[in-house]
Length: 202
Image (cartoon, rainbow, N blue to C red):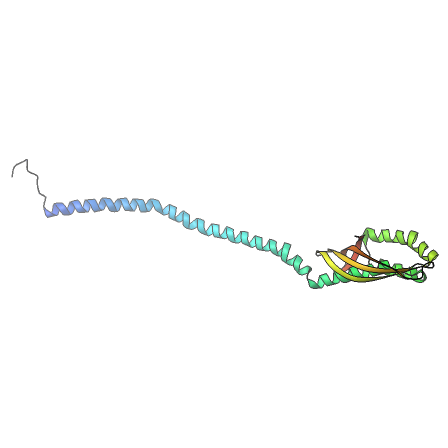
């Protein structure tokens, strides 16, 4: 065989070449795997952390909803609405009903439904205006609630719209004069009792 002719390797030579090639490929794959492990580990670590944060956030949101929405709703259920309506209706009747023969008793009954600045105003108003007029003209008024509806309801405050009929008699006009009116009654819960704090005709 001449020097210019290509040499044909033996079977052993071919095996050695294949091993070398396979060795190189395996080494490269091992290096790639080794370099990718930190990335995989970072992903595996990040996912649980994100889930924990999401759980904490959802737990905080649930707590916020409970204390700001659920608990106030539980404190303003149908039973509370009924109590507020009754307090507004009874207080309205007491405020607008009096007789010259029982003024002190009538005013005391009305005051038991009032609180705050409105109680102070009522004291002054009845002493200076209502009592003198009732005694001088024998004024007698009778109020009757036709209906009431809750306009606002919170754990410790409420507003009720009250529709009321009032009849008035006097020494000069013994026949009852009838008048209908609507009143926005604001109430506050004081030591567990709903009391009137504002009384605004509308």
